[in-house]
Length: 263
Image (tube, rainbow, N blue to C red):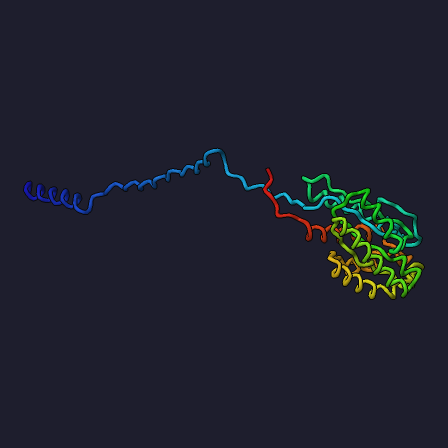
């Protein structure tokens, strides 16, 4: 009996020790922290900067605007015609526009040699004095509205003949000439009697400029009647501002030089 009890004890002990022993739970493998990449070092001499913008330059700086009241600055308000008002004329606005673009050339000047009531034929004699007084490199010539106003169809030949003579006079003195077409006129206006002859006149002015070696700016094609005052002939303040923009664009196209880097 004692032996049997011993065997049973051994059996119980063996049974209690059988099976898979408990294993410790492995710890998770830590993810390595990436080493931060240092920023690239700036090149010697400091960080790079973009090159400065080119500075526009122009090859001509002395201009004379020559003509009649459309140059001198007579404005036509929505209701009544006003007297000459030089600040509203296009030459000072053109000068401001050129100086704003060509900042390194403060010597740019646009002299106003307009005279209200003058015809193109009368302007021929005055042009010489205007050239002597201002010594221009470029003459902007827009003249002849009064010839059409007072002489109608007969005025066409007066305009073209006067402009042709003035081109020759200026070029003989070494002055580059830009001829402008006459601006549009409002049919039925008090001072728009030349309107029926504008197209013929402007076509002949274009041909004359080409024959005489002058430039030509078709301001008529770039101004609409919203810029013409109620008198039918003179421009509004906005019209003179637009006229200055047109001439500024033509001058830029003709005389701007290749840019140089700013220093």
